[in-house]
Image (cartoon, rainbow, N blue to C red; front, side):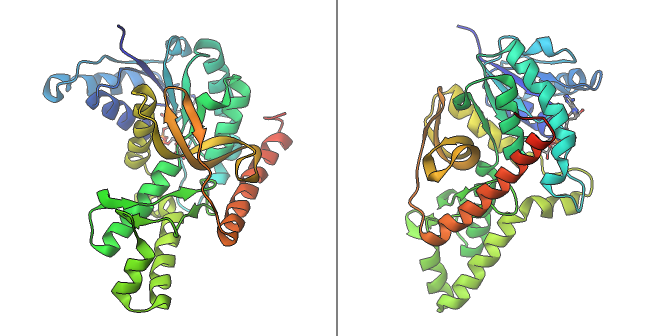
Length: 323
Ligand code: APR
């Protein structure tokens, strides 16, 4: 029995946390690739030297050669530039498309049997590009955005209601941008609708709605809130945790139901585009897409979000990154 091989493309802020979390959970051996000479080697050495303290029996290595991807079971891609204050994720399109194109070619060359989780932004466009250029099947190429957006939404709800975040279920669908769609109607605390609890807390529908709207808006802008505070770079602990939850679901065949950026083939009235939706994630990758019943208002917001993803994909076509 061999241990799973996890390859990280990008050894920056997110890459480092990904490696440490994968090691702590003993998900498999981790190889980290980066174009910066010695950086992935140094980071991996630093993390693995705590193996006695943390008690993990996995090997961590670094490389500047794409051949290190050979035999990978799962690749997590964070190569690319993060946002600076004032930038939107979409501002990264051309710069990161140039990087992701090369990453995709090498994944297609060295590990066509692997699963790929993309984190680089603008997420929906980068997953689309990576899948097309690598030639890997859509069920094995997906993006991390919804797990984090949902976790952010759940965190704000837990704080507002004064309950454990472990008991909050909240999901965010759509693209990973300003038009994402937090599903208010389905948000619950151990089955009890959040809106119902807000109305009881504040004694009025209007006030409950106002508080919910503030949480929704904070969720949509949460990435930017962190960027503005950090000043250099964007969020990295929470995106890494979120992608590791996805990798674990795949490597341990957990069939987790998670919000994932997956390629739709008719679901939600969308065909051929990557968008955030709930899926069953297991050893087959995106094994099933779950269709949530949306009311007219939710569907309208979802459509707006899908249109913004389509706009980015059109830009990639115009710039000749996509056919
Ligand atoms: N090939 C491989 N790696 C590259 C390339 C390339 N062509 N260009 C840059 N990188 C590496 C950088 O050397 C750096 O180590 O990608 C890494 C990115 O790390 P950070 O700058 O620390 O960014 P991080 O916070 O990890 O975010 C990475 O994920 O959430 C998104 O918006 C974020 O697009 C960004 C990505």
